Amino acid sequence: MEGTNPVNKKLAAALSGGAVLVLALTGCGGDDGNDKLDSWAKQVCDGVQPQAKKIESANAAIQKQTADSSAPADVQKTDAQAFQDMSDAYKAMGTAVRKAGAPDVENGEKKQKDAVTELNGLSSSYASLKKQVADLDTKDQAEFADGLKDIATDLDKLGRSGSNALKALEEGEVGQAMAKQPTCKSASASASATTS
Image (tube, helix red, strand yellow):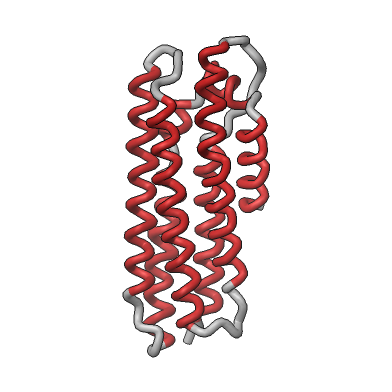
């Protein structure tokens, strides 16, 4: 019988794939000198950076809880809290992008709306995962491990379904403007650290 440890390791691996989503909000590129866009990028990056840290901490908490000695109840508590933190973080990112308004680029309004919708969707998905993990029976280790397996599968899908709207938002000039923001650079560095 597979205990919770190998399954929780799968959960941790699936989660680190989710950290890639944070990277989608942290562009890279040169400088084109658009002050309006720079101001927009600063507002978004300043709003996103603390949330990227929150997601990184939630990832770290789940990774830490993958020890063999972790009791199902401890795993459940840690995972539920981590998913709640991620849900809150993605919702706050969506709010930051919404409040910043549309970037001053072609199709900026559509790109911004799509990104907000995507971030709010991620927030809902993590809230749903929190409910799933909270509903697992920790008294039956085999049943708990099976439940975690399902959650790891959902997480993996979530990591893959990804960040198309976020990528579209940060194409071209927007990505270049974001790359200049110190807060986006640090969000990118911290998020990529969790994926290795």
